[in-house]
Amino acid sequence: MTAYILVEGGGSGTRAALVNEKGQREKAYERGPSNPVAYGIVQAAQVIVSLAKEALAGRSAESCVLYAALAGAAEKEVQTALAQRIGTALQLRRVFVCPDLHAMLLANAGAEEGILVISGTGASVLAKDRQNRLLKVGGWGAVLGDEGSAYNLAVSALRTAARAEDQIGQSTILAENLTEAAGLPEFSAFSRWISSATKREVAALAPAVLTAAEQGDLPALQCVEEEAWQLALRVCAAHEQLRLRPDAAVYEYGGLLEGSMLFRQYFHQSLDSLPELKCQPCACRGLDAVSYLHTLEKCPDWASEWTMKPGAAKVPALPDTERAGKGKTLDELTPEEIVAAMQHADMEALQAVGAASESIAAAVDYAGHCLKQGGRLIYTGAGTSGRLGVLDASECPPTFGVSPDRVVGLIAGGDRALRDSVEGAEDDPVLGAADLEALNPDGRDFVIGIAASGTTPYVAGALSAAARAGARTALITSSTASPIPSDYPVVLNTGPEVLTGSTRLKAGTAAKLVLNRISTGAMAQAGLIYKGRMVGMAPANIKLRHRAERIVRELTGLTQEESAVLLNQAGGRITAAVVMGIKQVPLSEAETLLEQHGNRLREIL
Image (cartoon, one colour):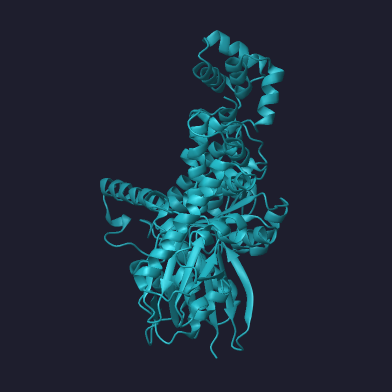
């Protein structure tokens, strides 16, 4: 038999494994998210391509087929674009892409009728009859409706708790449970927290609601019962519309249904109008469910496939950054035309960064998480890319007051390479790994590679060493088909440079913009920015001293003289001076508050 690759992915992560010629599934590899709607088709494809290359482990891909079941891959256009990108990049024989729900239902129900019920972060119901007609009910998302999900349960509980805080309705322990679960000082802080929380972070509050319900809290019980009933309602709707048998199988999957006996009991009770339904755990899931796709004789209408055309070229394509652009070359232009051409190119760089906003935001979110957990941001790159990383890292201590070892920049060839070319350094993956390992990375750190071409061996070695140490990784690249695997790929489709191959231009500009967003966004997430001010800044010179006094004055409402006195008493620490001024407390108490809240002024004030 021919070897084939299995891929399952979504908003949390992606897994892939090779099934070899003997039908044996080999080691599974994991990477970051690959939901094409949430993170974009380019990023999703890059994650899958990098995983597939690992799974292939040097084997030829020419005769292989790849089967991918992904959350967010319901639209034909998305499936087709993904399949084409993956197939072209890997030079596979065939690529098959479908939604994860469909693969799971097919694997569990086979040729029989069945209903798949998912209740996790989100919720959805997918049903099929014996003619393989499919019907999806629910799963409209956070705004249009995600009834029966952990997210909806948490939102319902937050609203119930807010009403109780206003002394409207019944008293409840929900406010206390939810506040503790979110790590907030008081319930009122949710009004700020919810504005920046991700769907996954909100859904993570659901266990606190279930705990309150299990303790007999009536409002919490009502929240749980309502979401279970809403989920059951969608099962009944699917059952009725497809006219399924009374004893059709219902396959249950997801954290709420599988992790909470109380929720499951309410769900089953709410199906009392269909007492013969056979509710059972979803037995076939993950890569096991994806493997069922291999048994399909033809591509169904809910999936898409790409096939390598006979005689298609197998010559590796040049990286986007190495291709020549169209039109006149720089040496054919007047000075005015050169400036105009480069201005246009820089606008393309800005557009490329904007198009990658979702993947950049994911990197910002994880970078902030690492800093809050005491971890580090570690940049690694060669040449221009390495210099950009070192530049961004060196600006963080004076700007945000962090220790220089919290944001670190590694460049191939060491500090000498900041000024001079160090021959061969960027071509050495062992050197990249050694430089990274010298920092003793661990699971708290976030290692970010910068490689415009997407192929720099030094960066590949560093990211590989980071993964072995348990650290998550990101790759900032202008190549849409980079072979370097990472958990958070940030793909900047900047295209050819005006000076062919000179990635210090468009690609470098775009990479610097991304680094600005990651470091600044992470510091904001970590609480080192307050009301748009650099409250962690070290006033190391006269200009910065005046800025620090101005920040204290603007945040406390005190006079210039009073602000200067407070800053002196606080030893130049803006955060301490602000707490002293607003809370009217001595330095010792201000320092205690800052220590208790991880220097996050927003939590204190």
